[in-house]
Image (tube, rainbow, N blue to C red; front, side, top):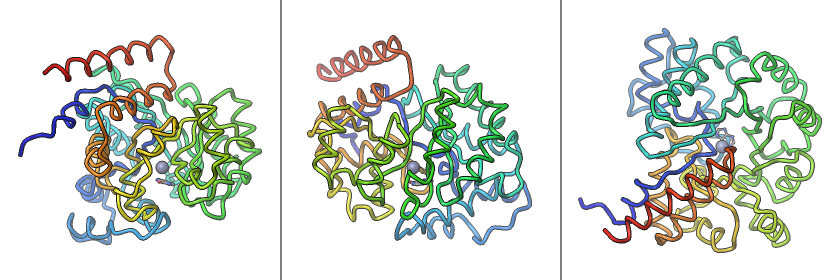
Length: 342
Ligand code: HPA
Ligand SMILES: [Zn+2]
């Protein structure tokens, strides 16, 4: 099969990924391997049985599986192997900078030490920077279906490791758990002088996006696609160039949209929203960053200018210095120009 010319542009462009749950990069092969290594019994006989279970009807049906899958992660080396496998994929996709979420409560609730989780992930991130120059940020996410008190508890456990934690996020079951539930917890995060983001407007209404902006003072909105239901909100997001970390294949798998052709990514780009493409939970949703780009290129008829804009937006919204951003934006223009004349 010949490669579509735009797919070689997608491959060659430097990109960042800003919305990736490291636990969601657990491929079935690694799930089985770790289950065996750690003597954990899985409810699935083989890889096909695991993949067959990836037929989600909404966010919650996915989360049930995602938390169950994480049970195979026990030792520091498991977290290292998980993170390393993702970083290798990111590097192959020419992702040069990634900002990943980890959910410590998913593990501390099962009796795994915070340090075990953190040290494994941190070491893999440091190794990827040393080996490939792949830079990264680590964002600690609170599980919003749990209580505020449990959020404060895990934040306390994180204090000794803050030199290697770059920000905080909010994920898990959105409906019924508005950002306002964590206003005081986020105030404490701000007091620690670290930036914050939150999932909002994935399944939840535009009001949750307003709460994330006004009560939690987020630097980015994760997903945010339901913002489109409010014209006033869109206007504000455009005016503020508030980044929305959009995850197209995730949205289709979790039935936010029934078909990728119905996804508003292109419309959002045309409206001037600061959107970019991310994989969210690539092992569960059918692909990594370039898979998402290629699927969107095909379903939404993206142009080369659209693809370049998405890549540029990914740097605009990244937590890196202006000098680093300028360097990568120039590299994008260089790659685009070379692609056009080939
Ligand atoms: O897509 C998601 N949404 C909310 N919580 C999550 N935790 C992992 N992935 C997700
Ligand atoms: Zn997510």
